[in-house]
Length: 85
Image 1 (cartoon, rainbow, N blue to C red):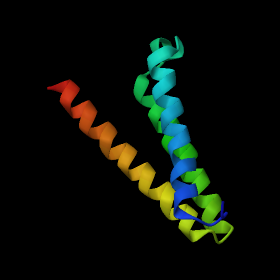
Image 2 (tube, one colour):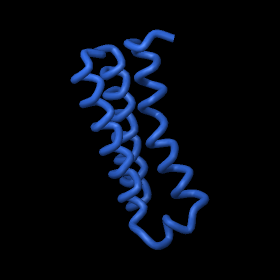
Image 3 (tube, one colour):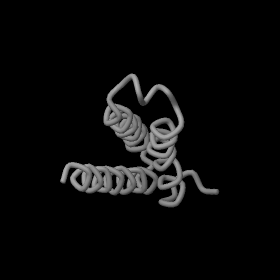
């Protein structure tokens, strides 16, 4: 697999939000801390990954991470709005 590919960026960008979802669902850690903080940490990890890719001139991979981060955050906002209603 190419190092500078959109698909690789999407795959790496999905890892942190997926881990946050699994921790929220199956870990006692989610009970002791605010569940949104797990998602904020996942977004921060993705933004650090995005910075790394842009610094290494891996633009296509960075775009994949950016897309996944925005979609995950929009999905989170949508889900949280529905749960508040």
